Image 1 (tube, one colour):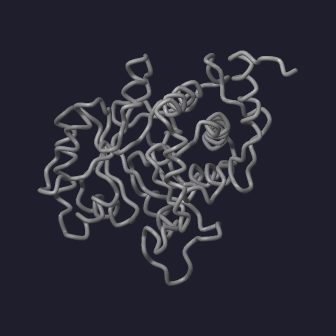
Image 2 (cartoon, helix red, strand yellow):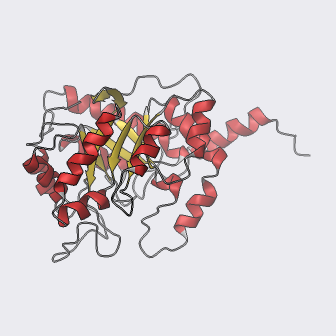
Length: 321
């Protein structure tokens, strides 16, 4: 007869089982990679300052929670992610993130962020870096909503910034920064296309931080010669020329949050984290399921420590933030 299992036993066995789940195609989770307990991580997460905010070098992304899969032709994946990430699971994910030293999450203000707000009401302290777009009329109501709902930092989304640059409206980027700062929040700009960064720097806009996509082309569906779309012609790439990004960001003297560093799950963290930090990123923004958090946090702590302190560090850029 099977013994009846109590809740504590079930949770313990579930956590042990989660250690066997894959982190990436070539990066299995180690047996020690169970989610951390409420006691928190053995070591603090390295952090830096963006504006007046202290932020962990590893930031939690919101795409997996929001169901933005970037799964190429696999049409069911977004639905699968939304079914998996129930409000209760999102709360658990946020709690695990904090327990492992992650202090910030990035999501779009128009998404359902109710689980984040419930997390705060229950005593959670993770900070919100909000994405926003312009209104159809070009106004800043999404930015204001993010501020009203508790964001410590706000940035225009990559596609918004890219469209403004393409239309010759770089000054509007500066106006968005001024609006955010007038509300006593940290102000940033994002881009998949490197032209957002170069246009901003040329105009002297001086945001508090940049978000720029960055990953190697060392994966199967990476862009081929002649594919110059900055976001990939088949939802397959978000960094058309990584070496150009390295060279431009080496001259940029403000914090850089690198995102899409896993190429939407195509590159394992053990390859992507060192590549991003060694190439100059000050922070990395990574979408994570609950069962990936502890291992990713340990990896981030180790990589940042080595990159910052090793005599033979390969980092190409001073740390900002």
